[in-house]
Image 1 (cartoon, one colour):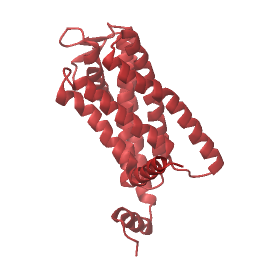
Image 2 (image 1 turned 90 degrees about the vertical axis):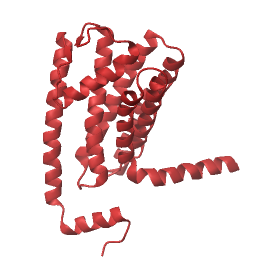
Image 3 (image 1 turned 60 degrees about the vertical axis):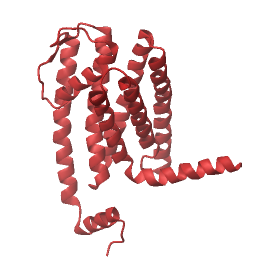
Image 4 (image 1 turned 90 degrees about the horizontal axis):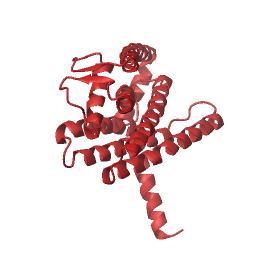
Length: 261
């Protein structure tokens, strides 16, 4: 083995050692950063490029989380399941990453449409895996809380990607308060904004679903968001009540980086 390969392996192991215990918090930070890029920078200049970069970082962290999912139970079965998840995720993820580079430097409607489908399927798969991971947890930690918030925001992002695809296939699916049609660059942040307001049932009314498909999709997202919060709160309260004082002490000691007394 060459010196370069050895150094790369050591660097990879060091990154894994430092990132793995905090990977869900890192994913949550990447999601928030991706949501904030376009409002802060705008739709012109470096805005689209920065947004694409933030989405790529978010995607890589999400794929990493799938790869290093905890194995609790029948190890052989879980390893096979993790391998299958990784294959599906990277099969969708690699074309999605390529599409981000292509659409920035060589914009095309067909590439944009294919990318919308890929990203929607990919993040639907990621969100489903994060939701399953949340429901498998037995103790409340900082990482579990970060995972729970990430799942909620990923649900909004996935629905936003669906609205982007729907708007592309049905240009009259939504009525915008300004009345002016949206460009392809404007569609992404606006539809994600609409998805988050729908998921949280804020509903400012500036964007209105018009077609039957858009209306039912928005209603389904609003109901899903409310059920998720209700189930999540009940789940976290139940986990908190079942944790013994010894478990609390061990958890605090682990988070502080010391041995429990």
